[in-house]
Structure formats: structure tokens, C-alpha cells
Image (cartoon, rainbow, N blue to C red; front, side, top):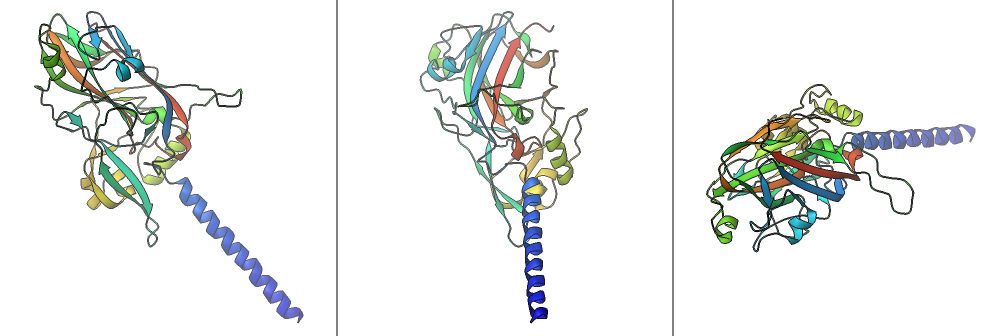
Length: 335
């Protein structure tokens, strides 16, 4: 009887150990789950947008009222009739390879499932359509830039994407910087040029540029949290705080691809994403101007996109709940 009891006690202990081991494996799997983090937790609240023009540049959201600075309110309530300005109340990770179709940046939403047989994470991609209003997963809006002479325009050194501290409801505490700003991207689609004397309908309807790609800006490109560096190592992505980290933007719709393979570019999934090299890359704290584009005299219509890049190493579980400010300053003075 004593032996039987001892045997049962031993079996119960072993079952407990196996359960503990199983839970540990689950926890480790969750810890390595990055990029397109379920698309439900890696979001930004309290969006803050500002676009500034200076030194001979003027900016407008309706091609009628010209200013030096436009903000959220101008974009949402001062846009031209027929504008498709997408400014959601929160932003969720998406991905883009920087290509443009019909004047719109090709954007893809990734959703993640688990392969119960292999244990791999699988990603499916669906192409998104810009919509007017507060819906959608990313920001997109039109602006008009006016200059009296043809000249080179720069992204000023004071442009940045930064953490915005917001008070946590019911407490005296503020939100902390969790590094999500490091996976932010901004894209500029130059749609066309017109004369300052053209009608408003002509200017708002500009599309003569017929672009096939956007100018992509990657801010904070050498900044990574310690957790992001750990995740990068687990995925086999070279990353450091002294050099740019490569990433691969999604380029098509697909189902059930291996998530890791889309990140590192192996297997069949290598064709699902494109190695990216943004035209403008700035480090956190940057103060130098970056070449943007040469604008013709008159009015240039530009569509601006702001998003969280789901294939960036800083887009991982621990970054959720961050608040971000996008500040863009365009100038004709290269100093």
C-alpha cells in the first residue's frame, strides 16, 4: 500500500513538472512573438500631427487657404471637397514596400495565426484601401505646397517622430516611451504640379505626376530597445544601435506564409516582401536637413502617409500603448 501511494505521488509530481514545462514553453513562445504583434495590441493612441513649411514655402489642405503650419484640425476639417483624408483615432501596424498604384501607397495589413503542427507563426496579408475619416489602420492625407520659383526642398532637421507623454486615466502617472516610435515610417507621394493661377478644382485634382513609388522617411533608424534587439537576434536579423537595421516591406496579398521567412527573406516567402532602403533616414536627435525633392514653381500636390511598420524589429509586444507625435518640417533653406 505504501509503495502504491508513493508511486501515485511520484506520478502526480511528474505530471506537475510536465505541466510546468509546457507552460514555460508557451511563455517562451509568446516572448519571441514579434512583428505584426497580433495587430491588436501594437497601437498608438492620442495621435499628434504637424506639418510645417518655411523659407518661401506655403502649405495648404484645400489649395485655397495657405499657411506656414497645418495640424490635425486642418487635415480633418479643412480639407478640400472630395479629399480622402484618413486620420484614425488609433493606428495599428501595417507594412508597405513603398510602391504606388493609382496615386495611393500600397499598404498591407498582416494577421497572425499559429501552425499547430510546426509551432511556426503564420502571416496573411490583405491590401488596404484609403478611406476618408477616422477609420483605417494608418494616416493618409493630401497637402499642397506652393513656391514662387523652382527650387530644392529639404526635410528640416527639426522633423521627428517622438514619444508623447500622456497622463494615464485615474492616476498621476504618464505613459512611458516603449520604443514604438522607432518603427514609425512616413511616405510622401508626389501627385503632380500646377500653376498658382490654376483653378482650385484643377489643383485638387492633380495626378499628372503618375508616381510609381513614394519617398520613404525612416526616423530614429538606429534607435532600438533592448527587447527589440533580443527579438531581432531570435529572428536572425542583424541589429545594433550604431547602424541601420534592414527590414522587408510586404508587397502583395497572401495567406499562411511563415512569418520569420518574410522577415529574413527565405523560402517562398522571399517573394512576399521587398528589401527596403528608405530615401531618408535620420537618427534620434538629428539636426541636419535631408534632401526631399525639387519642386517646380507653382503648386505641388503631395499625399502623406504615416504608419507603424509591422516588419520593423521595434514593432513587438512590449511596445504597445505608446503615444507618438509626428512632426514634419519642409524648407527651402539647406542649413
